Image (cartoon, rainbow, N blue to C red; front, side, top):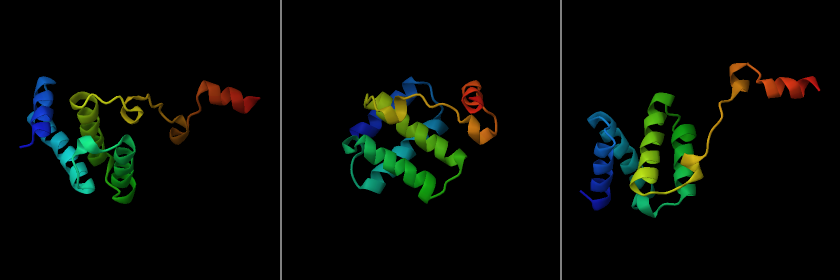
Length: 112
C-alpha cells in the first residue's frame, strides 16, 4: 500500500466514514490514477475535472454511481491533500429551470 493511500484511509477513518464508504472513496481515487497512469497527487484540477466529465458524460454512469466517485475525489483532494480547488469548493446553485419552477429573480426579470 502506498503512503498516499494509507494517508487517505487514515483520514477516512478519522472522519468516521463507514468501511463501505471508505472502500468506495479509495476505489474512486484508484480508478482516477489508473485512467491517467500516474499518482493522483500529480494531477491538476483540470485533469480531475476532465475525468469527472468523462465518467459522467462519456461513460454515462448513473447518478448513484457518479455521486460517490465525485465525493471520493473531493474528500481526497480537499482533506487528504489539502487542495483548495474551486471544482470542489465553489457553491453550486440548484437549477430551478430543470424542475420547471422559476425563482423570484427569474420571474421578475421575465416580467420586465
